[in-house]
Length: 360
Image (cartoon, rainbow, N blue to C red; front, side, top):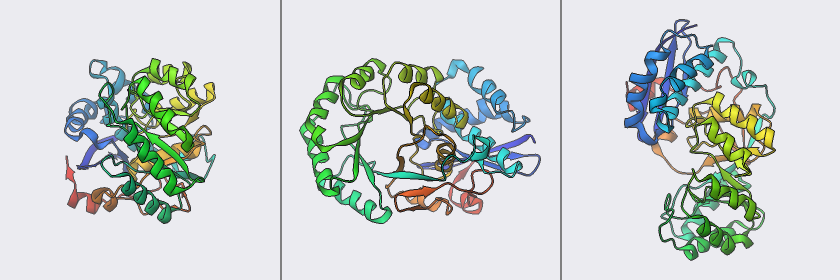
């Protein structure tokens, strides 16, 4: 079964990829939509010529041709672009074999995944943030939630730690003591700022402290992991196996979160999970799309023993994403069941995609 065409569908906040084959079986994937204008030409000019005519079963060989032979432009953009195609290849392969994808990744280790409600906002007042989270808890019965702190990639800049601490306190008081609370800095702080913030919020019983320092600063994370009595969570920006290795082997984290739609796809994410197993830490696939990429990450979590923590579920209201959210993916009672159909177990609405998304 050989690839005959690759089609990109995208809009603001959404980037789907369709792989067509000579057997009439299509596979769907998703790229991170953060840099659409840059990813489209990479797919069209760098990746597509390497994939057309290849067997969908030869994923390792295709990955080598795309990622290693284009090392001069290697980086997160190339990995993000390849991620959608790689996921689509897995989807097509599993459909051809008439199997759910998780059966090709190791089998069904767990059939439902615990969720945490994830708020992406940074501009709300503490009371507004708390009300937003309570709405999500009431709708989905989350047993855990996450909020943003800091200015996002503001390391080295002045930060208002008291304001961040007030936000954490307000949310904790609103959700009560039993709901787990996580905070995400998105590279906001220097090492000392991250420590100072934790000292201000340690009494609020954090479940994890995510990416407080620049995502690439392994030394800072080694110090944090050795210093603070809270699980340190990193990895959503990483795409290189050697970065995986260094963070995990050097003890720079307790939770690792390579994202299948950013890191190069499912195979690369599985490699991160193996490293986590070797060093006794948890692997938490990162994904905030609630679409095709979300389904891929669910199959990864379903088939991977190390994925034994809460899984991110965005509570943001995004009209485009909501229109294309697969009906097969329903969050209930704080959990989501893994799709059981062939491939990813979802079927994107192509008629709607052709009407509402840009197609190239």
